[in-house]
Image (cartoon, rainbow, N blue to C red; front, side, top):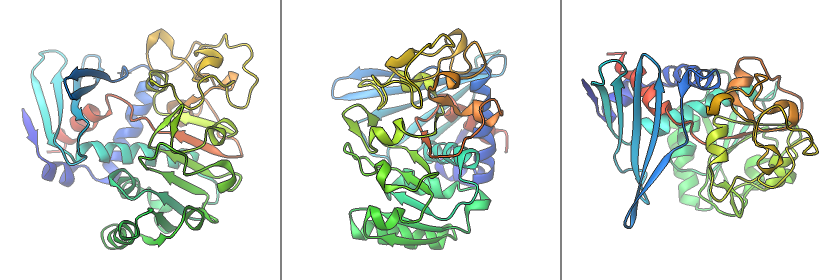
Length: 337
């Protein structure tokens, strides 16, 4: 058994390695090779223990556990077991693995969904998740100017200075959302805001938007009509999106781009607008497309495998943190010793 500290994770999990691992995991989930049910929450008095689990049949199974409410600096536990013997083969204790895998998932989505001619990157939010979206940025985007916004001046100044030094990016602080998104056709929204900080009138037609923060009915960092009116809406886990309570921002709306008509291709119909999965998993519906034919929210794996083409117009990625990817990334990191 190998035990990885945060220092070990930081040394082994590079942006390139994390992107490759997360791309493979997302495709595996879409194709039904990664079993990734929605997270489970256990109430423990004034705390909640959350478990995210995953497995690859015949290879490994594992989980991550963390508590809420809690600080982003609190230790989390990720464990991987051998699928045949049940023995623990690797575990990680700390706070470094989770944000790296979320950043890498965002980078995989960006690489697949970005405009053909990217102009600039706007980052709304300057916390850990926002940082790791830049940490994992694919090479072809690293020369773009980046503008970072936080309502707290010191936070945006510090974020920009640190990103310039540690990541080698051209980052400058923006004093407003408008200044950050002006002429930027890549927009990363990574806030804790329960009220929208971004709407369709704030972005250029054809922009790519990813949202990492709240995206539920009555509590969302982006306006629901930004999602509803997009040419393509993608997520890394339709099953997790369907499990939201309160439901996700498109719940109760017709599937985006459609009229909520015949939904016999899988999915959950107009109630959620989320494409379905075959066999109760997290991947394809019966036609191999996660609801795309009926205007639903598409599994990122369907885009990565070429099943769903990327149209012109605004593309939105609803990042939910595909379960099982923590264990997948730990398994990959442990194999690099």
